[in-house]
Image 1: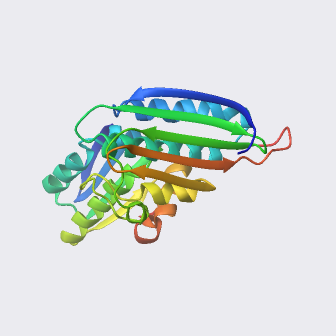
Image 2: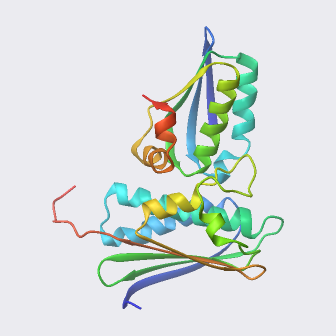
Length: 101
Length: 148
């Protein structure tokens, strides 16, 4: 998977591109954690507009980012989540604890 | 057992690069049932979870065989079977619990929960040391032509 990084005034946005399955997610959690450590953001946005498919591998990524942001006292939100990943977040209960815009 | 109207069987190696192939193949076969985009998404997600389980858990340190069987039965129903000859599951009830995983930080433990929620039926048969068979069924409601 490709990941695009933008950071402005301690708002970090990670733009995810590709298929977020076990294969595509390899190393992605580590990469996201490194970006969080470098930016120490107050707000993290995971932008799903470029995610063409997602299975439960995406849940592990979101839950790890949520935990890391809580430790930093910051917030997490998911932007532009297409219908298929949205259903996975809803079925797993993630949609109830992470804000989606 | 319901009458088979069509089927495909394919076997592949437990390489993670085959996850995408398996779900595209399943979606391609399912297309003849005229599913909605939403239903196609459900099928792809369920296949992805079952195949990933086989890759990650059945063959953690080796490469092994995975069989994917796609079957259409009477009543517009798609049956997906994912079989491996790997390590097997010690405790199926525990494995089905949401958030339970032996897969480490990169796995969420939500695979079976998602298969259950996206398909109508989920059946798991496993024997430690012998392998696991996951069978899922989903009925695709017939649509009026000219619909979505």
